[in-house]
Length: 66
Image 1 (cartoon, rainbow, N blue to C red):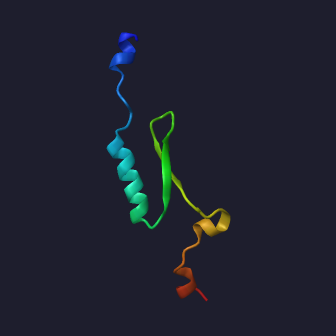
Image 2: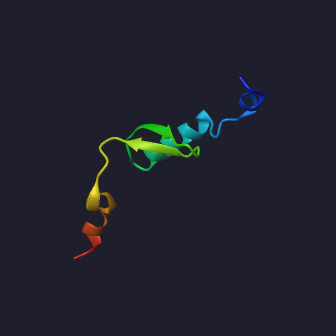
Image 3: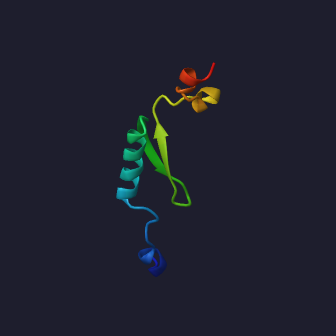
């Protein structure tokens, strides 16, 4: 292992991933896991996520819109 590889720090901590998953749960979503992209961004994967126009649907619209 080179000296550069030994001193390289991780771009995220486990606590960062845990925080992201808990935030998704508090938002009413069902996270199925996460992945880390090459920039170090945490991407939360969801169970049963809606796709298309339904993904942006606000249930309160049914109450307030004609």
